[in-house]
Image 1 (cartoon, one colour):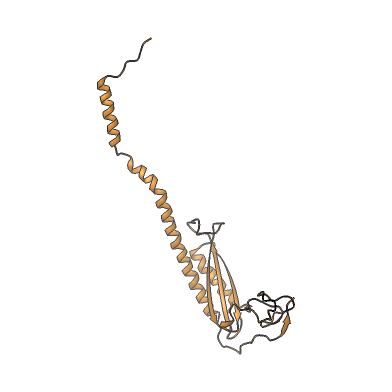
Image 2 (cartoon, helix red, strand yellow):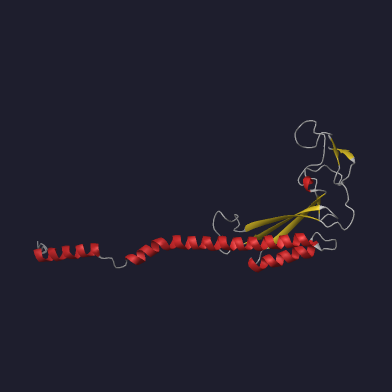
Length: 209
């Protein structure tokens, strides 16, 4: 049987020198380091761009809502036209955004979000079991929020709420909804101009079922 020739001392020494050289070779290290840090850098940049864009959309939305709310205090205002204007302004910075709005009117600022007066006999915080109440907003039922839907009338206080939903340019988990959308909300409170006598709340007594 023929045995393979073993490398000589010179060959072994040469191989050792090459191995030592490989340990000191730094060529190609930059590309490896870049491959490791690039994903983190890209996510960081996307997050910065996303937050910046969100702040911009939010500023545009709030500015549009404040302007629409001021215009809404006038007697002959078209609330539909104001809503359409907000939709157009938001769409310029967030293409494809959907905008929804609600208006609730109150007799005074202190009435905002308060329930209609009722006799809470069972102390459960709800008008039920034949408890009596005052139908202050004249809609024939007890309401936990006395506000009436719509822009109200002269001297009424109006809470104007607008929500804009859009798809972020750079969606980041935790900052978007499960469907990859984001919803921003703007609220403005204004008192209508005194262009007529203010309609007072009702005083009819009724009972809850």
